[in-house]
Amino acid sequence: MTDLLIIGAGPAGLSAAIGAAGQGVMVTVIDEFPKAGGRLLGQLYQEPDGNWWNGMDLGAKLQKQAEELEVDIRCGVSVFDLTEAGDGWIVYSSKGVFRAKKLLLATGATETPLPIPGWTKPGVISVGAAQVMTNVHRVKPGNSCVIVGANVLSMAIAQELIQCGITIKGMYLPLKSPVTGHEGEPVRAFESLMSLSHLAPSYLLRKAGAFGKKINPGLSIRFFPAGGMKVGGIPIHLKTAAAEIVETGNALTVKTLKLTADGDAVKGSEGSVEADFVCISGGLAPMSELASVAGCKFKYIPQLGGHVPVHNERMQTNVPGLYVAGNITGVESAKVALKQGTVAGISAAAELIGTADELEGMIRQAIDDVVRTRAEALIQFKPGIDDARTELYREQRETEAVFS
Ligand SMILES: Cc1cc2nc3c(=O)[nH]c(=O)nc-3n(C[C@H](O)[C@H](O)[C@H](O)COP(=O)(O)OP(=O)(O)OC[C@H]3O[C@@H](n4cnc5c(N)ncnc54)[C@H](O)[C@@H]3O)c2cc1C
Image (tube, rainbow, N blue to C red):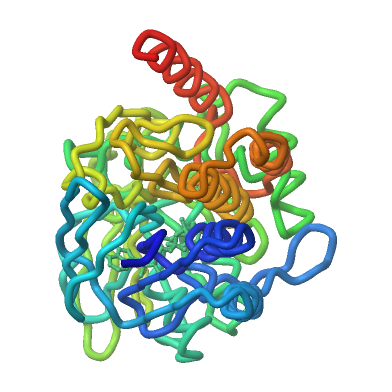
């Protein structure tokens, strides 16, 4: 039996492993992907200060650091079930059963599907898949691309596709419908893109964001050009929707419709745009199924991307011996996930070796690091993350005070 089993070898899982193993705890990390690093593996972009964020290098460094602390990292192992067993946890995986005294879930986030007519055709992929093809496997899905969905994720990945020499023919909204939800609303898309102003890898995007911040989004969208606006090489169309994707020879044609500022289709405004492939982007949601199987209490927090397992600042859930870290707790940038992992790893170690008092200062400092990193984060997937977390942790403190 290992002391601490961590599911997920992304930035949160690996930094948790380093945090716990650094305190002398025996740690095993398992991940279903053949390589450790999680979503870091696909991240390669230039930051506003000119430095490159090379996720693959960072993943390799974290793996080395963990292995030097004798963390046992096993890739290609997929967890499908788990159960609490009195003295710890039993975890069922594609490579057999694991037993652990404590369990930490760091399973990350998943892309939200955005079904539009034609989205199952060959050549239509998610933006995350395009990121993995270009940045992880170094394969260009095609020379030109249309992106459906205008949000923080699609903008970040569009910039990466341009770096790979891919022409972005246009970024469009999906048509407003019950399944496309807020993604089909021009005002929401505008708000989402405005939050990119301070992270913008391009000077132009920073300027556009700064301009947008000065005025009300509802008003701004009325003045947004019907023909779109090119920002950092990306033609952004917030008043045109992708209505359908059809195959035309070796390419794909996206049939478009003009939109009013409220997102309603304008009759007789049909158009089309052709590309080698189409990327769909509906945003991200925490991948929290295993927390649900474990019996965690959940709360719906839109700012964090959806339903999240309720947890406190130390990353403890309401289920004894079960910790969470990274995007499973709410969709944020890799830098925040790294810091959350450290908190969870040290918290779990303190509980395992009974040194909570000795490690209190370290845990407090790690929590402060999360807060500072969040405040400085260039990528904010949703507005209001900080307030939503403050409220969640305040509620948790009150609940814990009642039951202690
Ligand atoms: C498509 C996509 C693109 C993103 N792009 C960016 C970006 O450009 N910049 C940025 O800052 N953030 C980006 N993010 C957010 C990203 O999730 C965080 O940056 C960061 O990687 C989160 O770290 P994590 O450790 O919580 O999860 P992840 O890095 O996602 O790692 C989770 C790991 O858990 C493993 N796992 C999940 N379920 C199981 C299971 N049942 N059994 C075994 N293993 C399992 C996965 O294989 C994965 O390796 C992106 C997210 C996605 C989904």
